[in-house]
Image (cartoon, rainbow, N blue to C red; front, side):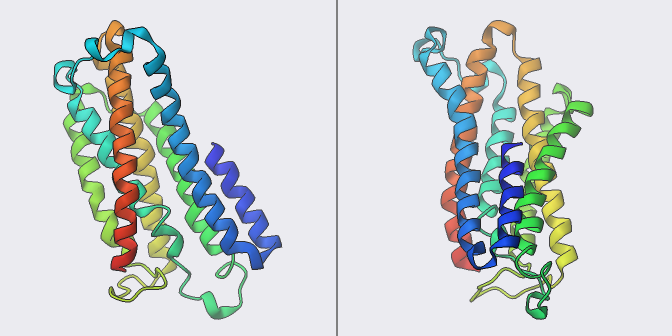
Length: 235
């Protein structure tokens, strides 16, 4: 929800002060990363301060039976961070030179930031109403791995500047469709992984399981952040 509020502010500021739109997009990108890290780090610090979460009593992912959920969460965030915001904010409208406000300064804030955060929120809400229970843990992992397809799909949209790869999808509609599916699956699969852990692990082990899941998510964010720089260089 915080990311959506920030995205709305970016849209408003870009519309009123177009000459500062690039700077604002950079700041929103930083806010997006910082908010994500703080949300996860908050629970990480809580576990570190809690005596019951000490390393001597820590069980492994396999011992707790949550390795598939941890792998799903890690890879989901890895792919998301690798593509967004680094590559996602580079995609411009195919009619960027038309002089239209929509295809100009509002395209990236709305179709990039706002759409991603709204889709992510919708995915989380959808998971609360139509969750994938523990018996579908392998399906969640497979779907998380399948999100790899969004890497080439979004990179081959009209991301500028580019020096190596061609533009295979010169369509604003294609980018919106890809970004919608990309963001929705991020929210849905991440929520599904966390919900499965809470239902699979006994109550007295849930805090330790939460610590392990937090570690997996932070690892995914970190690897994805480094990978994003490589993907931008490949464009």
